[in-house]
Image (cartoon, rainbow, N blue to C red; front, side, top):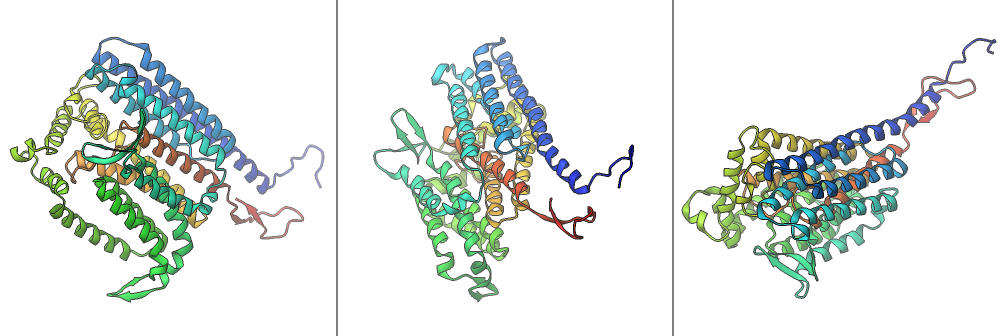
Length: 478
């Protein structure tokens, strides 16, 4: 009983509920502050490009990037309503990376004298706006990530169809020796970028249902347990079909990306490190055979091993691009030449395959380290979302989508810096390309949805404090 003037002690359960209600608001407020900072960085990058390249300020591109900032803030408002507990760092990181990519592509347009819709920068802004709108639509439609598990076979079929599309005679198109594109009138896109998201959903959904059989049932050969064909068969058939199609399309980068995705998700699902050892062994064997049997693979290996050899440097598809990119990185040094002050346009395809070299030339090693730190933080948050999940499907999907970004960044930057042979992948969020932007913003939307639904999952916590009339050891939501 309380007496007049006395204070009523608040239940720890009530305090916990109030704290839980404050957490989403804090997360979204932090996201808003970081978004404003990210948009400011993007606008400053455009401003510096104009000052460095043409010596004056023009409002056209600044206005377009400002409109993108408004669209991103609109996505933030949507998150406050439909995903209040989503991770607060993913959206700002994607925003600043996307904006830096637009600034560099715009800088290359200035060097080439391109303007209007003919310029890659304006098209990149339009594709970014479309990609963000698609991401918002996914957040509105998909209110719980577990719904996607029901459509794992639809995702499988979609992934295979997307991979096969460039092989069709009427819509498929070949560019730079690779048949990766689909052209529909004035529009073109690379379906393999969207296929990686579809196959990640399929792998996650199927491996959840078959994980026990894959890890505990099967024959043991040389100390390794191999699953039954009926358990691993469906996912192996889809994976093999994807590899065959990608080899015929001469898309080695995407083939490597899919191989890594399959291997990592299989390891996370079964917990057996033997799969990693076996997979790496098969990859090295396949790479050796491909370098001997496929001329275009052998040419890339030769250009990687001896890029300054005149025979490789002057060959068609040789090491000219690689050497120019290395010279650009060397010219940037530690602090770079400054945005708009270098010569990144000398490197072929600097707006797509070699945008890292262009950024390294004008931002320097410090700028590249900052970009790599943003990627590292993005991937770390994605892994954190995946491993924090209470359901196996969410865990596999979060890890798989995050690993796609991590492996893609490693393959691209490793090729540009001559750590590994060069492939045709694009740098996530930075490189020019509409299909890549749409796919990566879909990954952003899925990770945001995962982070929100994971935190809404009920967890039982034994409350040591008990109100009057409440039984000891009752479970309360955490």
